[in-house]
Length: 115
Image 1: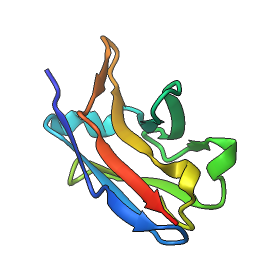
Image 2: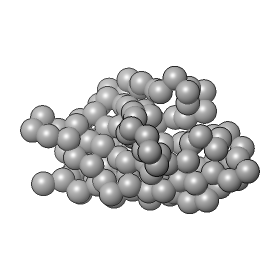
Image 3: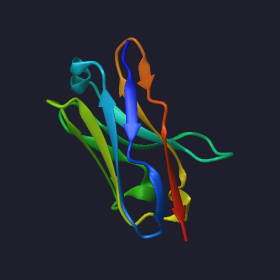
Image 4: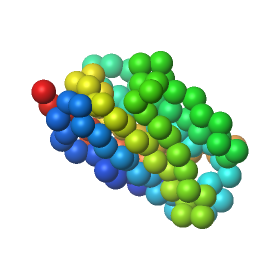
């Protein structure tokens, strides 16, 4: 079993920045792809960013240029830096780890952007 714990969410004014963190309980999780998803009320969960073991990244079109995903393998951590926050970024953000047997999810961290 793998446990993922997100942190770093909160209430931020539009135009501000946040750095979300994801800690994995299993050290070898660092060799697997990791990703951040988000889900706003009444909307489908969507992929925000994904990073492979060798550092290749993928981003949602609407966040390109504002979001950076990264990982620290020795610390078994993944991060999501969000700049120039917009009202539309308000959502619960989830960390995801892609293991061969299944995907593991954190409980989520709330990001709320105010005007």
